[in-house]
Image (cartoon, rainbow, N blue to C red; front, top):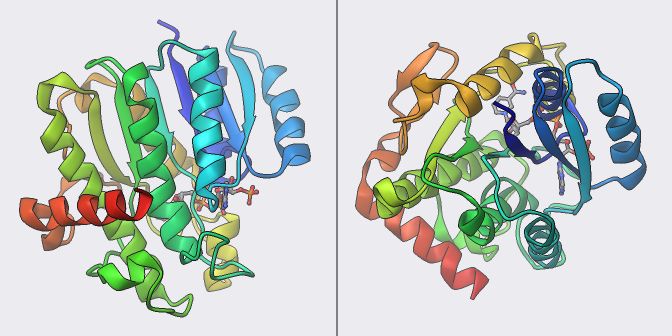
Length: 266
Ligand SMILES: NC(=O)c1ccc[n+]([C@@H]2O[C@H](COP(=O)([O-])OP(=O)(O)OC[C@H]3O[C@@H](n4cnc5c(N)ncnc54)[C@H](OP(=O)(O)O)[C@@H]3O)[C@@H](O)[C@H]2O)c1
């Protein structure tokens, strides 16, 4: 059955490959990017693929919360139902570390924007729906002051890691609070050091095959094995569900992360 699937950050790397696979398999994919001309070119390429899928395009810079709100509104204006959201867009190195909202760009794009987008689009998802959140093997304890943008940190691995533990933690918290009433919310490490633009820039290496990451996102979005996985963490380095950082297994700590984000967005 054709599914309606939003893939954020579908203009490059794992997101682009995931969108390509989904369209080829006949699904209706809502593409998203921050660069209008890059997005337009990709939409044109993907819409010509065999397989019977459809595409539509949405532009938004996810480092700006006003644009996240506008993206959610545009999608809600066009659709009464979505089957899957894949919160894939992410950033590691960036020319500007601090956003116009005064946040660190990694926390803004990797943690807070997907939280806001998910919250706004939740009414479009039925309990059979899924929200797939891109985590990482790299996870380090979250400093709430850094999350709020009060502590300037370098673009170090540790900082990027904090944003990935934070999205894993709010995923666990939202899954717990929605229970059976909401879609499945699943955090996925797509595999480490897959050869995307991000990995090449951050580590200066070619990296592995990004299709490894795209395949697991397609499975998480579509396959029955993920239907009852809400609140779980899939570690694609191990090829199975696994344990995230211990902080993500602590319901109280996960709740606090959601509360910090809610307070910032209020
Ligand atoms: N590659 C890995 O080994 C690996 C490992 C663990 C987790 N991940 C996660 O996988 C996800 C995809 O990463 P990738 O490796 O495929 O990286 P990538 O090739 O750099 O792709 C990142 C995507 O996010 C978009 N993006 C970045 N900043 C944005 C912003 N401010 N607003 C809107 N879109 C923005 C990019 O848009 P542009 O095309 O305009 O740049 C691009 O489409 C990320 O969440 C990453 O943290 C990757």
